[in-house]
Image (cartoon, rainbow over all chains, first blue to last red; front, side, top):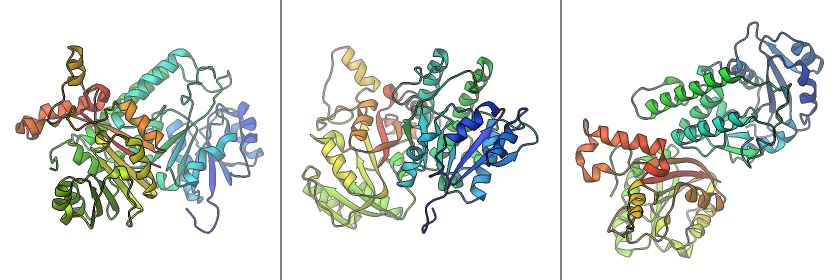
Length: 249
Length: 216
């Protein structure tokens, strides 16, 4: 962190067809604490890029769709190269409330954590926010397994509202991760093996028709990808098969 | 003695330490085996031990060794520490919360507390209770000198109540090599690896001990 001045806080928005919700989401970002907003557009077919430019965001376009993980890679690479000390991921679908960014970054600013995750499960209010029951139960089962295997005490691994310190992103090989949704769990596994500190704060979420949702089939594929990651993790820590992507940088 | 075989609680604790150099407080040194291992790795180690004979034996392994009872919450001139090590200590104390709070007060910025305790919900204890048996023994989970018992959940609660954030909670398998030396080497090690996998996948039932890394 830069010593003489306030740390630079950059919001990154991995976007795909977010035109309908983007303006409302950006309006809720507290500009007094956020120094810069970078939107990475994953080859949307709607007006996401035009609206983002109109809102004065720093916009990067993927010429072809790479997926949610691939989008995050561009987000973090850009944020780091532009000198961010803390990188906050906010989904432009407005499912998470960006007004609590100050609380999200506080543990990093206080030196108590290297990454902070907004958790929909902490306090158990996720279903009041409208999360479907089957998704809620599957989430709990996968989370228990991930916690046991990685030795963590998190309430969820799939939150899209996160803050990372520069130190965290410098220590993990996020570029080696999947381009799909499982990126979010992979980066946690890398954080574990790098001995980084991760904490959670409770957040509220909204599920509404405009918010992006993944369907049953995509959820199943996601679940299997997580099980695959856990097998790799076990083989890595057990010394059976070293996984270079999991090694700290 | 230092448990030096794969998946042992002592090896797990060492693996959770940040890379040396660093200042470590070893609470309850016993004969000083942890002090020897830590000093060899390049840490500066201070110890506390209540038993005078053990303290005398352990002293050479430490830069400073206090003959004191942690329940009196002694003031230490060498504080703050990067790591406070409570290896198999909490279960011997009448008020572990007070000792955890004292440990938190000794931490440097970014410091961590490492804890290991036995798992009272380990399968053998559960099966014993099922048939009405709860018998103290000279060693193990139901050691005669244990005053407090933890499950994974109650341990995490205890640590959170002290104002600490548990970062890693790892299940350690039973120390099979202490009973069957062959399990430390292949092919007998298959048994130990299976126990270690079970302890990782279902720590509440198959972990013999828990090892926790917690930060402020």
